[in-house]
Image (cartoon, rainbow, N blue to C red; front, side, top):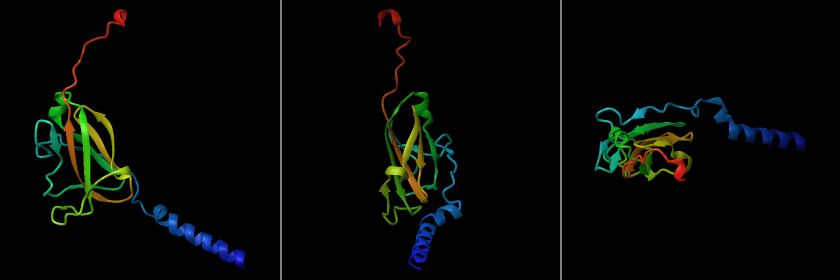
Length: 152
């Protein structure tokens, strides 16, 4: 009897832990659309700072296992590398009214595919958020020309 009860308890515990993740599709990979390439998508606050949305506006949807391919066309053309990348997340679409937001960390914000003026911001969790990105660019990359192997 004890053995049967223990087995039933173990099965119930496993079903409670893994059941929801196996039965719905909330954690399926989502899209990573380009954002910033069109007029009205993001704004340069200065020569070196870009924001996806103002703090006091509606933030971008940031679904589970989804993200944004952030691009700043001017920085791409100028070959400006990104030197700082911040993502502020909230459960509210308009967190300025509630003050409920934090800087994302860990799996809630993963930056990758960085090239001058471009980076992916990805939510690698099953949680849904809203997000505001702030990027800073460094000085333009300078092409020093071909390397002369004979002098190396």
